Length: 238
Image 1 (cartoon, one colour):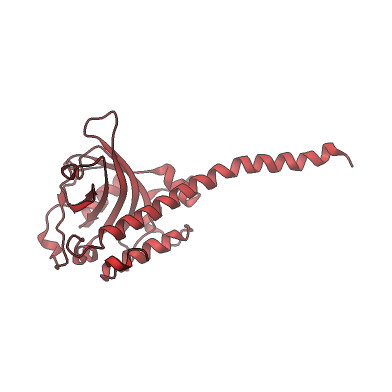
Image 2 (cartoon, rainbow, N blue to C red):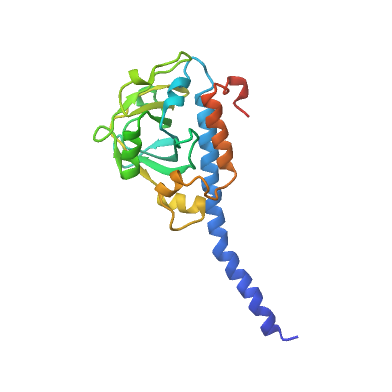
């Protein structure tokens, strides 16, 4: 047997492995981020006394979940984190998740701690449109208002602001006003998650037939549970 010819497929296999492994690793990173977002959302809704009112979730046009927003090392007061955004579809269900990043601003600093978990409720279509059209800057084109908490029903028409913000920091949770900060879609993470270098946020949130990892189904289920008041302390490990 000519070993030279045998070496060719082995070299090709090695090259293929080198090319595909980073892509798979990147997708695993995004899957872990979705899982982290799911867990944060469930934990933040588990306590009836501090949970986001179900009526507001039911009426929201979009939800962003951003775990572990950390204090920036070089920008005073600056923060940065990455999470997921889902949009309400015409049939009332939720879209595929689009990855986004938040930079700058102040969330939960009054609670102490160097990191915060953030949940943002987009209470009207205008706020969603601002995000979809480009950079959303709190205090410029959208206001970030401290959201009410508790088990009591809240009339969505009585809350102000385009986005209601909630923060968990140093073990404490509550509604907090957003002071500055920008939201931008993260194209690299979206491309990795959907394994498509040409995908754009508009396609992600409008095309429900996209091929996405199975973790997306788990995210949808948790969002539905939150609208049905089916997330309780003893079910946080569901």
